[in-house]
Each structure stands twice: as C-alpha cells, then as structure tokens.
Image (cartoon, rainbow, N blue to C red):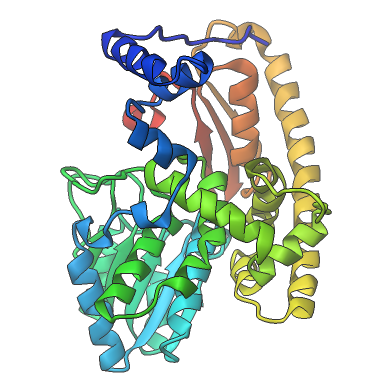
Length: 410
C-alpha cells in the first residue's frame, strides 16, 4: 500500500485579502474567520446566510436555461391528459429524484407512473427496450432524472414514435445534446444558473418549484420533500455549498422532525436512535447505502416503492427487504475486495511501477464492482478499473484519484 497523498494549497492573494477582511469582522474568532474565508465568504451578509440557511435564498428556478420549455411541456401534457412516465437512475440520487417528482405531481395529476431500469436487464440510463415499454403503455411524455444527457440516439428514437423527453440531469454532457422537449442541466456548457453543483434530485426539485410557481401552487408541500433532496446530496457527494447547503440544512431538519415515511422506515431498520440528532454522516453511512443496495442487488424500483409509501407498516416491510439487500451487498463487497487484493498481491512485482490497474474476474457481481474499484483506488492511490462478465461482454466500473480524469482519458 502506498503512503497517503496530501494536497495542501496555501492561501493565495485573494484568499489572504478575504481572511484579513473576515478577521477584522470577527477578531474574537480567528479560526472561524479563516474557515469562512477559505470558503469564499467575505462579508457579514454571506456569513449570516452560511450559518442561517433560508429557503428564501434559493435561486429562482427560471434562471436555469430550458426551465420555461420544461414547465410549458409539462403543463401541456397535463392539460391534454397525456400519460407521463417519471424515470431515473437506479442509484440513491436517481431513486430519490423519481420519488420526489412522482410524489409531488401525483398530488395534482393521476395519469402518471414511475419506472427505474434494472442493472441486469436494462443497464444504465434510457434504452430502446425501456422506450418500447413506454410505447406499449401509451406514454406521451417522459421526465428522466439523473441520466439522459447523452442519450442522443434513444431520444431520437422516442421522438420517432411519438414520445417526448424532459431531461433533468447533472452530469457533464458531450458537445451534441439529445433533441428533447427540454433539457435542465446546470453543468451544460455556457450554463448561467448560479448553482452548478445540484444533484439529480436537486434538479428535479427546481423543476417542481418552477412548475408550482407557474401554476400558483403553494410550495410548502414541495419544501416538505427536502429530506429526499438532502439524502441525494449526501449520497451523491456533491458540494454542500450555495443552494445545496440550504436544501441540506432544511432537509436534515425534516429528517429530524417529520421525515418521509420510507426514510423513517429505513432509519428504524438502521437502528438510528430517535433520541439523537440525525446528521449527514447518518445519511452517508446508514441511509444512503441501504437505498443504493436495492439497485445494486435487485431492482432500484423497490427503493422508489419504499420512498413513495404512505403506510408505515408497508414501508417497514419494504425497508426490511432493502436492509437484507444491504447485508448481502456488504458480504459480496468484502469477498470481492479480498479476491481483488489477492490478484494484486500475486502480480505485485508487475504492478509496482504501473500508474493504473485493470482487474477482471468473470464471477464478480456487476452491481458491486464500482464499490470495489473505490476501495482499491483509496488503498493504492491510482486509477482502477474493475471488470466482470455480463452477457458476453466485459463490463464494470472505474474510479480515479483527484489529479486524473478517467472520463477525459477514455
């Protein structure tokens, strides 16, 4: 195992100026002043917003390019009574996003369903198979969350058979974009939205916020779903700054007072004591992995089924099943990591001077190799690709270190 690598960036001239400014404001708290300055907070007003996040400080959702088109297309679909499908990725971000958008729209519209692809049968993102299933259900509009920004051919195929897409994503796009009815993505090139680090669920929340405002709907019910957004932000490890800090703050308050029924069931299964405050660490290490285990081990739609549950007894049954998936996931994770390390040990002489590692085993579980890649990257501090065999093809996941972009290299 290599030694830990520390990257320390000393304050530059701008940071020093900010530090001096903050130190003058709060001379009795120099450490706090330094931490604030390192986060780019240089005024009393900014500090107040940092320590007291307010929903009133959320950005206008219509500042996001494409929002007018997205809201207009959704309103049109509802006015024409089109079948709407809410579709998303099978990870925590995707399933919480689908749960939020479906639950919120269900309160105003009945001709709506949700769907999550299976890792084994569909794979990641939108596929022709999924689109054909939508056609068979007479779907006219698909709201796709946490994926879809690169589905150029699939969206074109859907358009050819009369199905339109509203894409709500937060992943980096290619130069060419799908011909969707609307695209909401704060990471698009040239995007001017003030917060570029939204989670997929966060993009879905902003979409529903815009929908509410366009129809004069009170947003309190939507704000009551911020616990789902907080879970997505923590699990997807997006920066908890700007809007994300506001939504996480109020989402955690919701988790501690009146959480989503499904999340309450997960917290019960995770044995999080009700006598203490639920923190981001609880979300990252206890709540998030259980939701994720559903998509890794079985079907991500089971996580959405849980998160949209209205009855606590039913939610507990679903949470119990998902808790077992998480136990199975942990055991597979442990075994495959041990097997991967054994392979590396056997070839240690050959790998010593290599700047990356690619490891392959035909019997490894497709849903676990990403976790194993993360563990190996942390252990050996180099880019790692972990592959297994699925449908006659080598498939898997890659993880990298901070200074090397695997996606750009590929």
